[in-house]
Length: 507
Image (tube, rainbow, N blue to C red; front, top):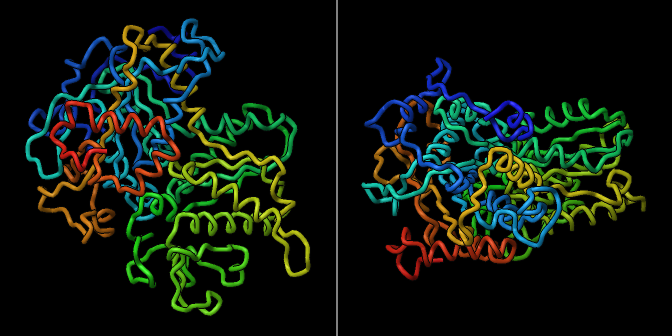
């Protein structure tokens, strides 16, 4: 691989040294992967599958939100498949590629590890995600003691998770450098920042909002990248950046019981989301009319029939989390000096594109909201042409460029896309240290109480099925990402790796 090709692979196609070494600063998990032949995580990289271009592409996220990124890859057509030049040709650009998707559901949400002082544990999870994609191992179910060894290794990895990109990208690249592999790694943040700034003229004023998990916001990954690209791109306008951490929103999408619980009708003690007395995420009673929370189907839990008289308010619907956070964003801007109109909002968590309809609706409501004096409160802060940025498309562009620059496209086989595979992490019930709640998930205290370096199998990675993906979530997939949903169905019903799954549990 020559230096010229390394440069034209954008920031995604990374050139790695072929030297194999373990740096003193490496995480403990890396040593086990690279040298401990008796450890589950060990991979013999000298025997890595070849040729690389025949292998699948790995994609992972902390949950199912990353399927929005995969769906963008599945439906992508912006290049000519023959010439590899820019321009649609009516053929899907990745139609000859197979994908392997991992949802690290058991360890999600990644965004909370920073807040609990567990950045190193998060990085360990991310390296384990890489290990799964780079290895040939998986389990058939959480209770199985022996693993299968017929999963394919991968030729590229897409980190379809903003928090993982922000906290683990550099460590992951460093780890891959030690393996001797020469494969591209694509992170979402750089791609999304470039895509967002493409909507600004060089001298234009305006605001950008980063709407992401608390962990991603705390990392300052987006803000730092945006400011760097603003400077390097010679943008001279007043481009302001506002950060809004979507505490609890990704968890609500994935139905984490600490933040949302179906079939409950009254406030509950284990709730961790925004509330009237949450010191960090307080529901402002004076803004109840602005929030305009949904109240049907137990979407809002209250200890009084009249919301205005509630002493306890709990959000119990993903849309209500959207409402809380977008109003909080607008209030942040309203109270800022000389705030520029919001021209773009980056959905900096892969779960958020599932809620584009709700996000659009709330912005329309806020644009038209009038205060008691009859004046519009937020209209001057919201551009008439507000761009809601889903980073997925920009990730697809960078993946395509990286594969082209390294000659990694599979040009031999058609129809591989239909053979894509989907895996999810579940608690390892065979691990006696694991602590589970009544629903079989890690307890919050156990999940964030673990320490990096205590190398053990907290989870087992198994194929998607109806036991580990809820019916409501599957309905959302079918409605919002139909082509990817068909791939999931095909894997569940047709792939030999899922033949042991009971018919009732197949998707």
